[in-house]
Structure formats: C-alpha cells, structure tokens
Image 1: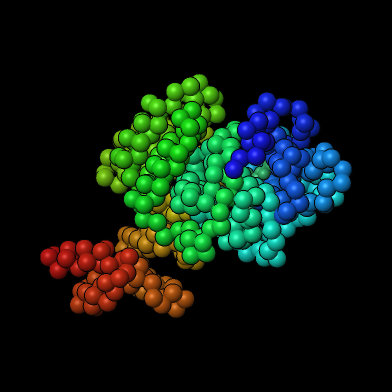
Image 2 (image 1 turned 120 degrees about the horizontal axis):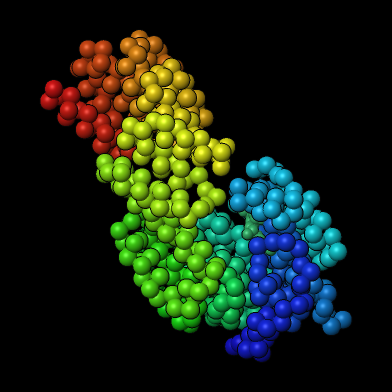
Amino acid sequence: MQSDLFLQRPWRTRQDAVADAPFGFLQMGESHLLYHLARDYCTGAGVIVDGGSFLGRSAYCFARGLEDRPAGGPPIRIHCFDNFLVNDTYTAHSIRERLGVELALGASTRFLFDRAVARVGSWIEVHEGDLLRIQWAPRPIEVLFVDVAKSKALGSRVLELFFPSLIPGRSIVVHQDYHHPWLPHIHVVMEYLAEYFEFVEPRIDESAAFLLKTPIPRERLAHAIAYPFSYPEQRALMDRALQRLPEDCRAVVALARACLVGTNDRPAEMRRVVEEAIASAGAASQDPIWCRYRDHVLNMLEEREGWAALEAGDARRGLALADSYLGRNRLDSSPHVLRFHCCLRLGDLDAAEHSLNKAFEIDSGLRRGRLHKAHLHLARGRLADAEREAIEGLREAPEDPGASAEYLAICTRSWIEGGRLREARAILDDLGRSEPTSPWLVIARATIDRQSGDLPGAVARLRGVPASSPARELAQRLLTSWQQN
Ligand SMILES: C[S@@+](CC[C@H](N)C(=O)[O-])C[C@H]1O[C@@H](n2cnc3c(N)ncnc32)[C@H](O)[C@@H]1O
C-alpha cells in the first residue's frame, strides 16, 4: 500500500528545502516531511489540515511544498486551525527568547503568524478559535497534520472534526506529538484504531505518519472519541502501540507509557515503568532530546512521589524529592509548590515562604495560588488574612471541589482559632446562597455548630451529606470522632 515516497523518505536526508521556514516547534526532518507531503504526495483529492499552526512554521512548510509542485495540478488549500493565543508560560518564554517579543499569557499571536506566512499567504485559509468549539464545513482531507491534540479533549475533538473527512486509501495523518512523552492518549487512540491505519513513517523527529487504509466504522470512531477506556485497557493499548514500533523508535514512547501510568496516580508502578524505559533506551540515551524528556518524566515521577510522601506524613522525604527534581532545573513552579507544603508541614515557615515566592515569580497566575497563601497566613497566625484569601479563592474557583474543601477547612480553623463563630455562621449562610448544594459548606457549618456547643445540630447536618458525595468520607470520619468524644 505504501507509495514510493514512503519507501524513499526524502525528509530523512534532504535538509535544505525549508531551511528558511519561520520559527516554530518542528524540527528539520518533520518540517521536510510536510514539505514533501505537499509537493510529492498531495493530488488535490482533499485539502491539507494544519491542526495547531502556532507561528506558521508547519503551514509555511506545506505551502513551500505546494509552491514547488510541477505546474498544472489542481489548487490545494491549507486550512490552519489555532486559537493563536499564548496558552502557557513555555510559549511566552519561547516567543521572548526566539523572537524578542514580550507577550503576556492570553495575548494574541496572530500578528506573528500573519507575518511569518505572508510570503505564502495565498495557499492558506485560517480558522481562528478554540478547536473545542470551532465549526468547519467538512470536506475531504488528504493530509491531516495534528499538532493540537494537547489534551484528551482536544484529541477527541480532532477525531470528531477531521477523521470523518479522511479518504480511505489516500489520507495521511501526521501526529506531531507521537514521539513525545506527555500525550499518551494519542497512542491509546491510534492503537485502538490500528487496524484501519498503516505506519508509513514510524518516526521522524517527534512525528509519526499513518496512512488510512480502510474506512473507520462510525461506531468505532465514536468509541475512540468518547475515550471510555479503563486504565488496564489504556495500558494494554499503550503496550501494543509500543510493540508495533520498530525497536529503535520506541524510546520516547516508552516514556509516554510511564506518563500514562503517572497520570493515573500510580507512583510505585510509574517508577518501575520509568526504570524500564531508561534501561531499554539503547542509543537514544545519547540523544539530548530523549534525555530532556527522560528528565521531564523523572520530574513528574518525583513530583507524584513527593506529594504521596507528604500525604503519608513524610514531609522530609517529600522535601528531598522536591529538591531532587528542582535540581533538574525546570521553568516550572511545581517543585517550589511541593517544597512550600513540605516546609510548612515541617514548621520551617521562612523556607516555606521563600519557596512560595519562587513559585509566584515563575508563574504569577499560580493555580490554587490563594490556597497556598491562605495556608501560609494560617501557619503564621495571620487569621484574618488567611480567611480573606480563602473566601476570595472560594468565590473565584467554585468549580474546583478539591480546593473548595481546603479553602473551607482553612476558614473554619481561622474562625475557631479567632473565636469568630457567630460571624462564621453568617458568612457560611451567605456562601450557601450561591452554592446551596455544596457538601463542603455543610461540613464547615457542622464544624462551627459543634464548636458552638450544638452537637445534635452538627450531627444532623453531617448525616445529610449524601452517600454519593465526595465529602461523604470526611463527614463519616467526623461523625465517628465527634460521637466518640
Ligand atoms: C506545538 S504548537 C503548534 C506548532 C506548529 N505546528 C509549528 O509548526 O510550530 C500547538 C498549537 O496548538 C494551539 N492550541 C492549543 N490549544 C488550542 C485550542 N484549544 N484551540 C486551538 N488551538 C489550540 C496553540 O495555540 C499552539 O499554537
């Protein structure tokens, strides 16, 4: 089924056709893959989709390939999809370092894209917006380049929006993140659909390319989109995806398998799988990119082990793990956050505050930032500040139930320690008006009632927490302990 192009694979050797391509997140080999697909593979049977255009590098490579086709073929369009926003601090950092342009999180990058593709703009049609919501009138796709499946939801959206338009026997899907550790859902889904695809390029840089051999039955695609796979199913699919690759192309996907285990919160199993990936890396262990990915995965492992240690009451081990992965020098606030909580638990408040400041220096919009600040205020005995941060945090992030529980626990402690039980009741009643079903509010209110001497009222409230609620376990624990005392 493979065309000559995939036997010759000129992108593995030819390194000059798109040497002038603008800055982006593609390496040279995969940039040339796009160039050659456009120049030597596309017939006009469908369009090219550039899913995740960033600053235009992939679009430019496709466009240069189309320009270099022999004259006379049918016109082919490149459909570029991106929200053209600075979505994360890494993107802001890269743009600053490479282009000298300072952009804040959330700022538009569209002007940089437009500038980068200006010379080849006539080949390009832009679809700007969030891929999760954007609409597109379906039309046949001859080459689908996927560099936007950065989450399960986006992966599913790619399947939903584009896969029904693939042409059996013709369409090529390039997954740019196939040889990347962070997105194992891509391997899981492609393996689930493996009988319909054939690897035509198992690895060029971080990309893998697949030919759609036969139509994907509608219900099979719907299942892949829904992604209802249990953890053992995902593990099995991932193992098969790994085995399907030639042995010398497995090293990064072996790290992706470790991430799959890690994201399913299995630190002990993850350590085994990471060690296996390192032991079997072979020549890849000399590749600086693989080494960087290995370090990212080790960071993820130690972060998870660190939080698990802290939760198990071993803050010293948590701190050692935080320091270990901090030593791998990331642009990331997370080791500082773990360090902060470990120091807090160990009672070293100055070290804790220092780590929290570091985390905010790296990421001013730190997730659950108010929660960390509130913990610090509480530990320092600044009860009013703790309460203020916690209430603000609650109001800002009602959709984060894990955080709501902690915010309320902090408020409850500061009210009790500050002897402000009457005010506490009024504030909880007020919060309850906007969130009448919150079980965490019920628990906070019950705790205040008990502290005020109303044990029967407190017990009745706790008994009202529904069995299906995530707060049920805590409610039961409190009930048992209050009834014993
Ligand atoms: C790795 S970059 C693409 C790199 C690009 N192909 C190149 O050649 O340099 C991933 C892109 O996905 C885009 N993206 C992330 N989430 C998105 C979303 N929800 N909707 C649309 N685009 C999104 C980002 O804006 C980013 O430009």
